[in-house]
Length: 495
Image (cartoon, rainbow, N blue to C red; front, side):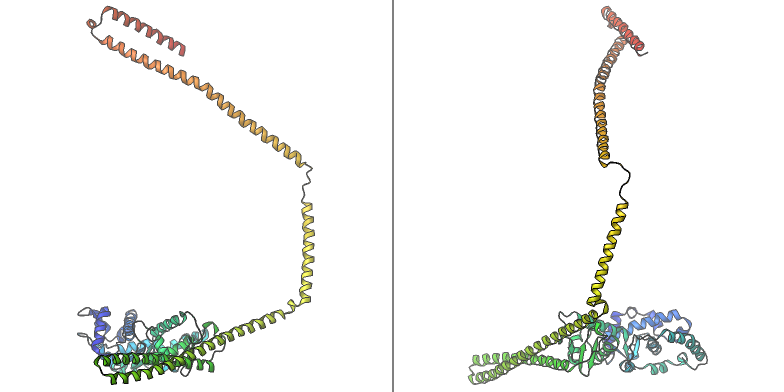
């Protein structure tokens, strides 16, 4: 990968490289050794930024002179490739790499490949406590005497010289392992052949899915296989044979047998035969096209030559197809036999387990009969005691149940008669109230008519005397007198 390609990648994906001039990039590219001692929080932020940057560069395959996507190559080419216009090269990269190595984010490739200890190993509590109580004060004292941790006094070139090397990016290896395990478990049927791979077939199967958008290199595959075997314990290896194992079977010894090697060899042979068959079919198609061309041109001799060659290829193709069918049939029988073997082992294990359980003294026939007899006696005793308790709880009040039931019915009839009486009273009350309502309405109508008559009289009294003759005046006076007498009578009656 060239420096220009890396520059294009940085300017298109990392925000700090997009702003011209990049103000924050200047502080990130500066010597951070002083910041580490004076501003721990700021240094942690800088360290996190460099972690993301290096991880992005590695996983995208944009390292200078390398296509690895799991391994960081901290060589002289890296700081030169990271040099940026108006900022220069990163001065604190050596210290950054050293600290990332100290905290386990980066692991030297040599240590990663040779160490028998898992990345996830945790020492005992006693060891960690002793290390904290004794180790930290001792380390601080030695650092004060400049006997250890003298990185702050080193120049950038000296720090980078100590930091140079190849490092496994732990987060990328873990991500690739998760993708591989997920893909392997997603297969519809996990058979004997599906669990076996060579280094080449493993790379072909998982090389493009481990890290999205990138392809694993040969070195990446070695690192990933070491992680899957030692740290994740999902595969076992024997030279070029790789076998996935079930995670729940870790308690049982796992090894690669001669059967596994033979099956893998047959699997590889089938793959090669399929490639050969495809190539032969392409050659036959090519010769068929040549024959047609020569016939169209009238060159029968050349057409005959290619026809003869096609016949030979067809014979070879038939042999290859026969061999492929034979090997596939044998492989299928081997898989069926292996499945039968697993079933028989399960039968044997379950039979032995059942025999072990039945051999317990508690399950001997005599003991079972004694236990059941004793249980029957205990249940009979319990029934007798329960019956006696129920007998003692019977009603002793001397009250006849028939008398109680008869009295209850009588009370219910009395209640029913009371309800009917109440309903009859409600009906009578309604009948008495109805005439009164009608009388009231009639009196209201008379009063309204009387009020209208009075209004008419008042209008006539207010009229000029010339407009009312003597006869009308006499009628008005008589009506007024009659009205007054009715009023007085009504008042007296009300009193």
